[in-house]
Length: 365
Ligand code: SF4
Image: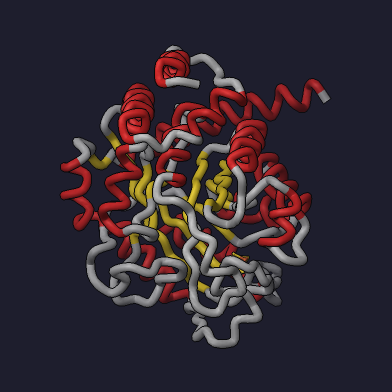
């Protein structure tokens, strides 16, 4: 497809037309400077229609780096004995959540490895993660995202009743053979089904993929179609970077444009969804590029010096990852931090749309 073909596809997206697989494949392959700039500009126009110039901030609390799994791309894999792990106490987690709320984030993202300690039933019949969600919700009043890995439908209901709003569970790829290579010994179907259970429990869903892990352009295209079929509320792509203690080859690396170009294509396909920009991979410059590509959420804001870094690797002990320090980046991109009300309004609208789809599906089944 030549450039004028690209422009026609972008015009179709601007007019709200559903892009065909061929059109999406073409956009995912764009690497030439001017064509990429036009793609990013279109993604920003579409973001502007849905969110104006407002972006949302997520406070990230990675409170346990213990995990029962052995994903080949992750340093927290159980078989990595070279890693010094941590598991925070409840009071440390609650205090950090309070601090992030005071700093102005819109959501508290409670993330952990698949650590059974937080999911075991206490003698009084409650579960540690459920209690944490309830306390943090009561104290901060903020929406909460949980990322406990694959858990039962019962547990998802309990977390939703305790006050969780979001369930993040990344397939990382929807190409089954690649999934089996990345998430060794895990079930593709159970992971996918957990997201369906979470939707039934009234939770919003974040789905995510990795790039630079040996996937093809068609694998990314397939993932975007699966995310569309899931009606994911937040969609993320993250570049793989090799870390110590993992078996994945150093030769695997995403090309520099794979992540931002896919973010822009996501914005065209999921115009009103939350799409994160993380500075984990390329620092503040990377954040700027991802916002230019149409992202509207800044993730991985962490309390400095508190040891909640998890997968975050850059600027972990300075104040570089607090909301106030990203002001220059936002100014550069002509963006502003949204109000808490804006975020709550988006959640309520999205939830009522999900309930509508759920009822429609139930009535068809
Ligand atoms: S990606 Fe998640 S589930 Fe896999 S090893 Fe890392 S922390 Fe565990």
